[in-house]
Every structure is written in structure tokens, then in C-alpha cells.
Image (cartoon, rainbow, N blue to C red; front, side, top):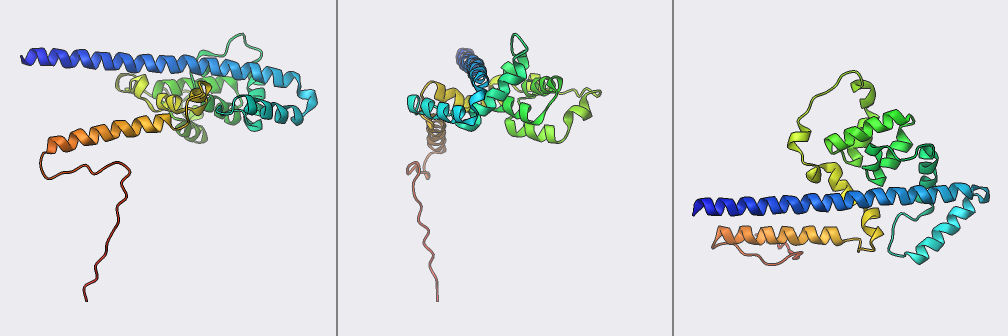
Length: 229
């Protein structure tokens, strides 16, 4: 009987891992499509640069009217798309490490790292170690490239940190540009997380047995202070 239960748990765990990996691959492919969309938009903006900032401002207004639930269409982000195009227009395809990073990571690299070879190096580090955008900025500010270029550091990240559970992967899953491309609501990820947390808390309290009670989620607690004279 124990072997049967153990086998069942292993089957369930394998299914869960498969679902998580598949979800990440779907988002990863969506991320690549988004980057190439931004590249094409950047090309159009560059080709109409003779009209100055007015073109970007008017384009931003028109796109927001057409896609009201989609973020990433501000004049500032459209300007970043033009820079993105300028930086990589001479290559037939975006370097693989960069194509696998979220948009936020990509424009951070463009703004903070001028040499393309260094950008690719940092992009590879992001993928190997699962860096979030915040960690990436921190490592660039600490000049990690100069400190590690000739001094290879060994780590166990690849063995201990599955891609779909790493910081960078979570950044990609939370990236609003990805989700809003599909017109999903802004707080969908947060709500799902809240529901999962509530389910775990409820099950935990049930295991504790008597003496514990689940009152409700987002329940307002009122503190009463008694003063004894």
C-alpha cells in the first residue's frame, strides 16, 4: 500500500513539474514574440524619426486608444523600442541569450551596458543564475564583468535552481508586458497567488485540529487597548 501511495505521489509530482515547465515555455515564447514586435515597432519609429517626438506622442495616443488594456505603449517605452532597433538592426536575429530575457532586462542592458559583447555576457549570467532585473542592475553596478571575466566562478545554480523556479523566470512570468499582450487583467497573477496561499493556510489549520479557526481573508482586525487605573 505504501508503495502505491509513493508511486501516486511521484506521478502527481511529475505532472506538476511538466505543467510548470510547459507554462514557462509558453511565456518564454511569448516573450520572444513581444521582443520582435518591439523591434518592428522600433524600426517604424526610426523610419519616421524626421517627424521628431510628435510622431512618438501621436503613435502612443493612437495605440492606447486601440489597446486600452495593454501597457508598454507610453512615449518613453516607444522611444526605448527605437533604441532597441538601432542597437540590433545589423544582426539577422537577436542573440539567443538576449532573446530569452524579458523586455525589462533587455532595455536595462541597453541603458547600462554599451558594449554588445558585455550585454550578451550579462544575459548569459541572468539565464544561468536566474537573476531578477534588480539583481542584474546590482551586478552591473558592481562591475561583475570586469571582476569575473578572467576568473570563472563555479556554482550549483543549474543543479539546484530549476529555470521555472528561478528569480529571472518569475520576473518573466510577472512581466506586465507579457500578460497585457493577451489582454489579461493586471492583478490576475496576484489574485491567483492569494487564492493558493489561502488554500494552503486553510489546509494547515485543518491539520492542526481543534483550537484554530480561519475567520476569512483580508479580514480587518481591530485592536482594543484597555487601561487599568
